[in-house]
Amino acid sequence: MDSDDENVEETVEGLLDDDGLPHGFCTVSYSSTDRFQGHFVHGEKNGRGKFFFFDGSTLEGFYVDDALQGLGVYTYEDGGALHGNYIDGELNGLSQEFDPDGKLIFKGQYKDNIRNGVCWIYHLDGGSLVGEVNEDGDMTGDKIAYVYPDRRTALYGRFIDAEMMEGKLCFLTSVEEGKPYFEMVPDGKVYSFDKSTPSCISTNPMLPDPYELERVYVADSLISNAGEGLYALTAAETHTVMSFYNGVRITHQEVNALIAASVFSCFTTIIIIVYASLTLGYGEDDDEVFSHTPVHVVHTKFILGQLVQGADIAILIASIIGLGVALSISYVGCRSLPQCMCYDTLTGMEWLHPDNEQPQTVELVCTIRDGDERIFNSPVPFTDFRTEIEEEYSRPAPYVRLS
Image (cartoon, rainbow, N blue to C red; front, side, top):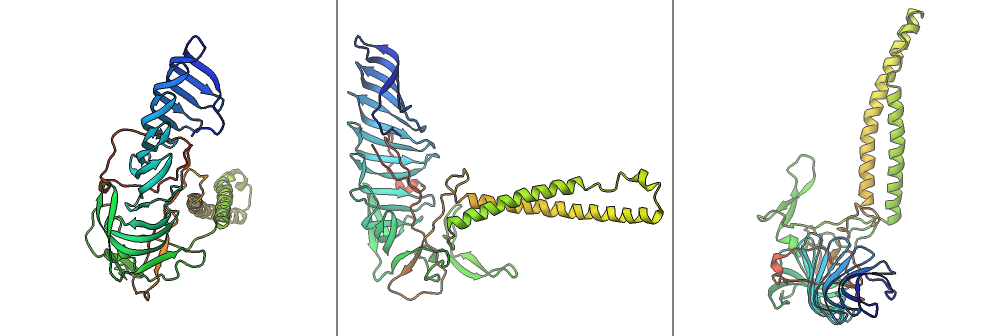
């Protein structure tokens, strides 16, 4: 990520020309703590070079007359990368973005550092968003589609910031030069945005999702007293998405309270465990005292010691189990906090309900969420562009700001 201020050169390591300007291979450090390493010609970047930004991200490519030209690669601080084509230092043309594992998460055109034209955003579950972005590069418009993981079933309609507001069932028939072609289902249902709340999972929870309807069904569980279970309607390969999930949402305040209570419970449980461990040997060192004590008193103390030891053992077992439960609750709560290293971005599943039909008695869960946004300044690019979207998986794509 490039800094906002103008980079003022602080130090130059390398050869200088007669005017004291970098000439040849040099390393230039800036006041923003950014650093550039590459070839210079009389103070201008010319040739292969690489920026090292203060946040750990990098930008590598070929410079001509101080401007990045051709293929370049911007590597995020988490290891993800954006490969694209630069003209006069700005991203223009075909670009592809990959997550830290090298999986494709975005493919499309850029114009003057802004996403342009038909773009694809690939999700972790194998689904994708495709459509023509607006002038700000957002997935907002009336001709955008969510394509399910089977790369055939789709919902085509109006989206705002990659969230479906209203969509109609259709099927993806072909993709030519990155442009998708859909076949609309005659008299197909129109689905609309129906986000779950802290008190309501869905206004129409029995509506079948078109993708799930062909793959799963609900019936009595084969396990005794287990209620209903989910069954497959068709054979499926490993890692195939069969059904989505959803649930009642809770507020951040509730999550924070849950975490605080769990942490407090952990501390108190540890104190109880320590105390129980210290008193576990109660009465075992009283042999000398017992030798001068009446028999009935010794017998009473012996029974008391056994009771204390038994209680301590029970407390230890219960406390260890309770500590494990409290730690599990804390971990689950922390997964919803972006500040935690265990933060899980795969939340926020949305529900759909039809505008033109009565609910059917089949289970529904459907998702059209884009996920987290990533912000950075200057991106980058590289070699071989893969065009076979069918071979790539994805994660929620970051949202880009180029400067």
